[in-house]
Image (tube, rainbow, N blue to C red):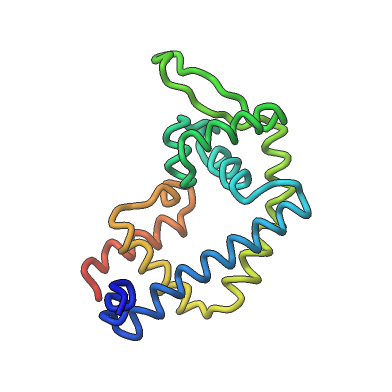
Length: 178
């Protein structure tokens, strides 16, 4: 028997379903959201993620290396994407005044407009493919599991959103639950 199959069979049925289900639903939802954004707005999901990450930042700018890490794109891939977005007028690259070696990407007004135009499509797609298929309890369970698996407070909790902050604190208070 191949080692992959042998190791896979070492997982319980629930573990196999949880892991393989996560991979399959991620691949399916990402592919569908990407296609929808491309068809309706000419934006890839990666582009949408970069614009959304920049828009969420209080200064609407993020260091290039950090941006690549946040949206899970290689640094060379991020450089190429930012070059395209810069040509389209959606972002600008700038150097930090305090350290000219550091380059950051900043979203432009045009980038904010494009993000805003695509946001309804994106969130309608997320709801239809994900949240509409889950109960509130299932959604809470997933949110709690992601927080536990991430092992630290994720960057999206830093949003100025009392509900999101409260959800993270509730999970923190639960501690080693489960």
